[in-house]
Each structure stands twice: as C-alpha cells, then as structure tokens.
Image (cartoon, rainbow, N blue to C red; front, top):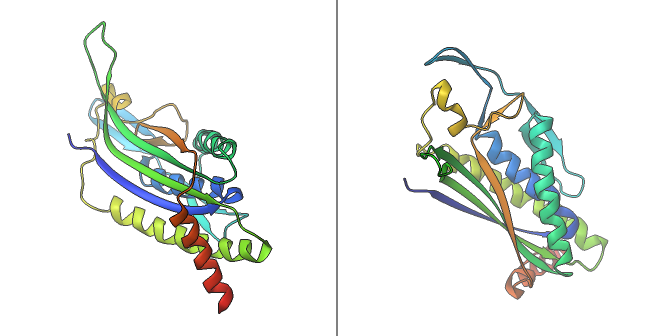
Length: 218
C-alpha cells in the first residue's frame, strides 16, 4: 500500500500556534471521521450522525469547523499543547512540525504485536516569528487568517480526490480501521507526533516581515 503524504506550512507568532494547529488538525479529522457504527448482525450496520461546531479563534481572524466531540477535542488539544510548549522552550524563534498519521492495523500471529500500516500522513510545518509592535500583530492576525482559509480549501480539495481509503470493516475488524474509544464519533485510526528545529530559516522570517511592511505601506 502506498502512503499518501501531504505537507502544509504556516508562519505565525507564538500566541497563534495553538489556534492554527487546532484549526488544521480539526479540519482534517472532520473529513476523516464517521458517526458510530451500530451493527445489527455481521455485515449489516447503520452509521450515526456527526455533529459539527463553529470555533472562533481569539488571536487569528478565522473561524473553523470541528466535529462536536468534546472527547476528540481534548485529545487534539493535549497534543497541540505539548507541541506549543516544546516550540516555546526551543527559543524565541522556532520551527517545528506536527504530523497527523492515519493507519490501519494488520493482525499478526502470536507472539508478535499488530502491524500498523499508514495510508495517509499530513505534515504541518510551523514557523514562529516575533513581531515588533501591536500594529504588526494586527496585520499578522489578518494575514494568518487568510492563509489558514487557503490551507483549509487545500485540505478539502485533497480529501475530495478519489484516493485510497480503508474498506468498511466487518464488526470483528472495526477496531483495525477506526478508533472506537470515543462515545460520539469514530475517526479513522490516527496518531499525532511532532518534532522541533532550533532555529527559524531567515527566508521565512523575512517573507513574513516583508508581507507586513507591504501592508503597512498601503
């Protein structure tokens, strides 16, 4: 099986990291989740509904839509918070990447553990910049909102392609494809990981500052 790989990149100030990551991760998971499966007998099932919720950002001019599952939100927020703290501890300027990997399990014979086979990976590269004053922060607030809108459209376009998805499982195999631990939603099996780079590339920092200066000049 070939694993699809998609890369997104955003440049934000430190206080925007959490909201930007939540917006993108929740957007992807919104399209990679189903309602709970209710099996009547093997091979026959119905699928529950998935509620959605609009979330307004505090530090970005942006509203995103997420699955209205508090359990799922807590899991995502915990991972994003750990990533944000690691970025913060890396220095004033930082660069990192958070990845969302979807996989399915392949049963192995005892005594071997199940094999996890990835089928789609989203990597979000994050560049953190420092801004000089409140005027620059306000411009960044608007520009980051615009960029996130573009990224969300990009995510939806990619997901709407007719690409590989794990086939709908039988009742005995549902845990090999979906995370069934949540009571109100059923995302495909996934895991979140991150890595931090100590320094920010000057080209990225310069690009953001040029964008802000060009806006100030208007």
